[in-house]
Image (tube, rainbow, N blue to C red; front, top):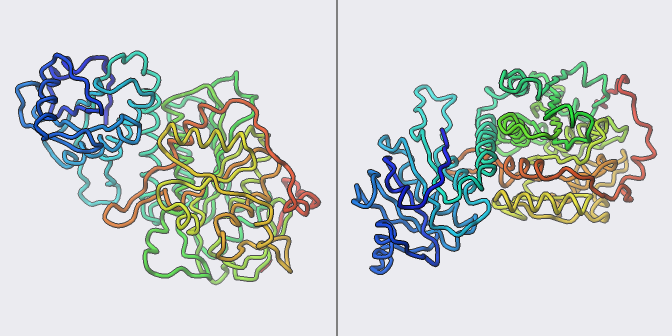
Length: 517
């Protein structure tokens, strides 16, 4: 889908020939002299149009505009959330229409709102998206051209470009998260990452290294390898790097770590059969990292970013990890596996240790980690945990600006008490109570040498039911954060859960560690 930004008032937008013209009408509405404004005022006076977000009035071949269809839609206070609601409502009705191929969206009546253009573009892209890869007769995307008409278009040119890049990233993340597990194996994900690096459009800005089982074994990633024991699909550890120019090559990067479980049966701790098909979405953290790099390849900002994706399947094979097994992580810490369905943290912990070599400005891991987070926050906000007040504030602000919301949850030391083990340095689960927090405390043990944040996206990465499919979150949040965060951050390096970890010798990169069992 092609987006175009034009600087014009409502009268000029009404003269653009198009299939549909969408006009957002805020509260309060300030009428102007043009014919569409007069029409809006008449409709408001008659009670046929409301400015409540999402309320629409449709007209066919109106005399006041060159469009075949005119949709007037309430935009409420013109907040970013209300703008998204308005666009979603207006575009939902024309999504499947073969007669609507080009669309004009007029934001001219809105007060000056930072982010309005981006909110509108992301909303129309979200509504018009359709997955087609594994369908025998895929239908092409019907909506091809979208013009965003706004007064003072030059002032929002940068916002427009970022929104274009974000949409490309979100749709790339949706594509890979939506693919069935047999079309999205660890090998497939590695090929997708290599494709980003090898694209001629990216020149030398993106590099990709893919490590297989032998290379991962040499690194001593015993925890990661243990999860992959029960499957015939070979694991992959993907290392992506984006460098905007030689001037930032030596700067401290922000590192994104994405959980890449391409299918999660739960392993020996087998999940219930109901809705297990949705466990193809358990690599949504990895998909979001790929999506961010896709966005970076479009926007080409002058920053440095590293992406780490540990990816494998979690299957109940004859060699699969068993409850009670003790494994050794790359950090040297031993882990008692009480539940093999808590596997995401087992692959992430080794990736967090690997991230140390980049001397990062900050590390953010993204994972569909716990059902407990869904119980806590539902599907509206992602869960946020961090050892850095600065980092937590930046991520929260980025989410607010991108309308990709998160909510910070506690990381108190006392929660780590539930992870104590009689047979290893730590257990991989701590019971039902506070499950999202104890999972974050587990990861915290492996992220003590840099500012770190954990985003639990179990409730926000995909939708169930009739609208089943990936959301592409939190690509908008992550992209906004990366563009903002270019300064050093403070964090708390020590806490009582990590004293044992600090006393452990760190394995050399060439050593080989074996998992118990």
